[in-house]
Length: 387
Image (cartoon, rainbow, N blue to C red; front, side, top):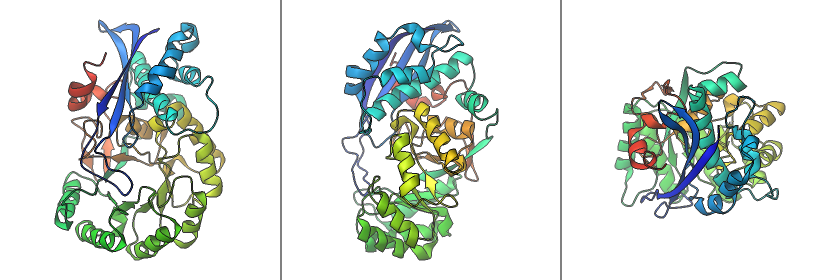
């Protein structure tokens, strides 16, 4: 099996939504197709990938460094003992001559290609990705369904409390038990009113998570923590800068509820430092490392091994991203769940067309690979004509 082409395209993901830190009016996304000489059903086997939302497209890095390294490699160096493309070997070749540290952009470029390689490998074996992962890394055990929560509650121009409530009702009607909303964009008093409006819909603090997207300094993070305490929320997410481990540690001492962070940490080293120095509590806190943003599933497997060594269960991991790739990983590796974007970041967010959320959980299809072909808008608008 050989890679015969790698196609990259940058597409727009812009919208008028914003969180506490960025608006998405200029957001882009990288999409890749890895084409091989393996023929099944009369067609070449192709793997597809894209980067998770929130980071811009990385086409220049792919074209300048990572794709040329794959093309220049000895084809035999890219395959495993089964003769098929090995994502781990390709991942290592992409990262040759890259200095350690500074993981913020190149990790996204590598992770995007990595997604396509895992889609490719599962298709070459003729199995769903979740089954491949369970058999290789989880003793054959895969979850029949995965916990998912509905991420939304963004700031929109002119969007008032009533519209926010209608949005959350819509998620509950779709079968979600837990919803998430943004905070930190309009001040603590406005956010308190927004939170109470949503609680009037969902009925219980344990059905609502809030996300500050790293906006707060320590004093503001503490003020919000004190405001949030009485609500007993599902979690308080990314209060401060992702690398401010001291801020996170201080919050852990004063905030009794669950907290979540990690979506903007892009290496096993940064993930390890979070566990070592940020006061994260393995009995209640959640880890949101995002494989496509952090060198891919190859690196994420190392993160899971590190977490196990430091006494953390994989069940405390709920990846950021809200797409089919992370859903397969959650089911195959026995994670705690997966983010979901029912209403934003389309056509990349969300799952197969016939996927149904029941009591906050979703079952995976038996389609081979990641299952991108079962999400018709993504397939028709983006992937179908990529390669």
